[in-house]
Image (tube, rainbow, N blue to C red; front, side, top):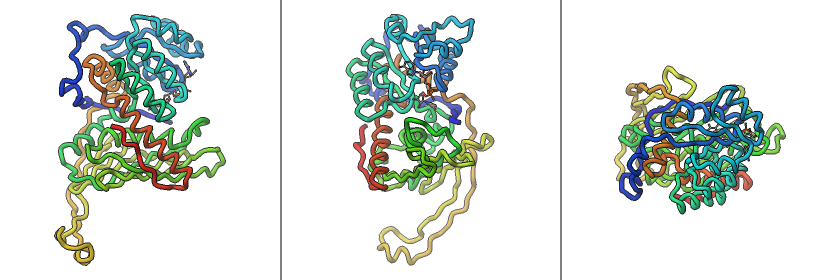
Amino acid sequence: MKKTDSDDAPRPDAAAADGRIAAPAAGERSAPLGVAVVGAGYWGPNLVRNFQSSPSFRLRWLCDVDIARARKVLGGYSTVAATADYAEVLADDEVAAVAIATPAATHRDLALAALEAGKHVLVEKPLAATYADGQLLVEAAERRGLTLMCDHTYCYTPAVSKIRELIRDGVLGDLHFIDSVRINLGLVQRDIDVLWDLAPHDLSILDSILPEGMEPVAVAAHGADPIGAGRACVAYLTLRLANGAIAHIHVNWLSPTKVRTTMVGGSKRTVVWDDLNPAQRVAVFDRGVDMSAPEELGAQARQQMLVSYRSGDMTAPALTEREALGAMVEEYAAAIRDRRPALTDGRAGLRVLDILEAASRSLDFQGAVVGLRGAR
Ligand SMILES: NC(=O)c1ccc[n+]([C@@H]2O[C@H](COP(=O)([O-])OP(=O)(O)OC[C@H]3O[C@@H](n4cnc5c(N)ncnc54)[C@H](O)[C@@H]3O)[C@@H](O)[C@H]2O)c1
């Protein structure tokens, strides 16, 4: 089962700080933004619940081609309107923003129509079904000065915020490796492989924690379909980062046990995030390996010298408990109001698509290393 977690405040963005984006008009801050959710399937109701409990938004519509599903989600007493007609939503001047929680193949057309109608757009992950479609959306939003945001939910968890902070503050030192495992008995999807289903989570987390100069530059992917599903059900991605460090992601629909662990290893400390351990989700280890040989020595001379093992303390930082989707929804409102890119803006969605497409190409060529476009 897919799950979400809780979160604290996301980071402010440089684009707002450097004044490239205009300040909001007076009075614009206080009025709740009219919003419509499109898609009332598995994930849409979570958006509905969070928009309804947000003081920044007023939910006006829930739209689904299956109107009975939309009505069921809203219940009998809701003042929110249900519709199967998307045009009706877009024609509503009170709707300033839409949130799209429909299958990825529909994201491009639904998001583009909303942007053309002058609405801000939040799209569920992945941003679109292809990089080209994602690029179309990013350009359309930028041309119109509208917010385009991708719901990379995990980026809003307290754990990811803490890891981002530990990296930014230099607590981990230089980053050496990242290892992420997301495996369980998962729903075998009909339209996408395990890579496109689960890896967007790990890739978006990487995108939100890695500092500049450490962007992924190439990917190699291996996958297998041992049950004959017609698509990879198990996949391993190896990413080469700009500073020479390595990141590895393991996603699997066939694992009898559930594992959600991300490890970020640095020259000073290593952080381990176990999302299934609420008592100690994040642990920071002052343990590692130091080379006692001086850097100036050649590789052979260094190898002959002893490595030393650090075995210091483990600390478990306290994390706030807050639903990640709630923080994501508030970030959407803040990005619209402050006219700044969101923490997980359209370009972040595009960078994830870049890696997913390259990884799919690599899968087709038995793990060949594929370079990335590196969209920033
Ligand atoms: N952020 C997360 O952690 C997370 C978790 C699960 C799913 N998702 C994403 O949410 C999206 C939806 O996934 P889901 O599992 O809810 O799918 P789903 O199939 O359960 O629901 C999709 C709904 O969209 C409706 N729909 C389809 N086309 C439509 C259209 N053109 N107009 C209006 N309604 C339409 C369907 O009738 C259905 O009710 C996907 O992009 C998925 O990747 C994100």
